[in-house]
Structure formats: C-alpha cells, structure tokens
Amino acid sequence: MTNRAVFIDRDGTMAKDVPYCRRPEDFELFPNTAKAIRMLNQHGFKVIVITNQSGIGRGYFTEDTLGKIHQKMKDELAKQGAYVDDIYYCPHHPDDGCDCRKPGTKLPLQAARKHQLDLKNSFMVGDMEMDIGMGIESIFCICYCWGVNKIFNDYNMLWVVLQFCNKEM
Image (cartoon, rainbow, N blue to C red; front, side):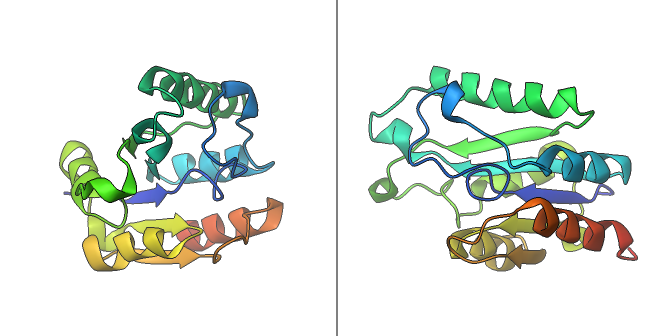
C-alpha cells in the first residue's frame, strides 16, 4: 500500500451541516473547501469522504436523493479544479448496530483495500468525536477535529490542509 489519504467527514466539515439534508439545493460547501481539496489533490493525497447518512434509514430521503446531493458536491468541486476520489456512506439508523456507521471500521477499511492506502500515513478530518474515534481506534491514522459545532471556515480548513501538505512522510 503506497497511497496517502485524507478521510473527510462531509456535514460540518466540508459543508454546512443541514440536519438530514434531503435536497441538493440545501447542500452548501464551505467557501474554501474546494481550494483545500484541490491542494490535497495536487499533493498526491487520495481524498475519501466518509459520512453517516441515517436520514436514509429513518425514511427522510432515499439513496437516489443522496446520490444527487453527492453529484452536486462533485460538480461544485470540479468547477474549482478539485475532486474526491471516493465517497462512502452509512445509510443505517443508529440503532441498527451496523459496522459501517462511524466510528465503525467497515467503510475506511473498504477504502483502504480499494485504493491501496497507507493508513499510518493518512489523516482523518471531522467535527465530531465519532469521526476522530474512527480515525484513532479503527484505522490508526492522524486526526484533526474542531469539536462539535465548530465549523471549518475559510482559514481552519486551509490550515489543516497545509499541515498535511507540509508534513514529511
């Protein structure tokens, strides 16, 4: 495994946290998310989005709707020369007891196999303890967290990305 990755949580980290975002028009990237992701792309990181989407399991929206939201995200990133390498999501209700819901290991380990990732030289960025729990306990990578309700604004996201890009591997 030779690829470094940055695992990024979606809601509250890359984009405004809209509870159970049900419509593409409600999805909004933070202002410098695309710039930050483009920097990661340019520095050879795989960018993997891992997100819990229990709104599907709760019946609030469908996987088709989620696909449209993710397509909007990819289109907005592409307009600014950025891209994510893959998106993994857990559609289950928190009470279902699945192993794909963060902080579970299923999704990051699937990504590691598919993209041949070097997890020890990869990073996790999120805004909640479950994001960091996944990174530390499950895949043993370096983690950055802003804490609940602390958003990645123009400067925070760029600062984190600069830390990744300047770290000697």
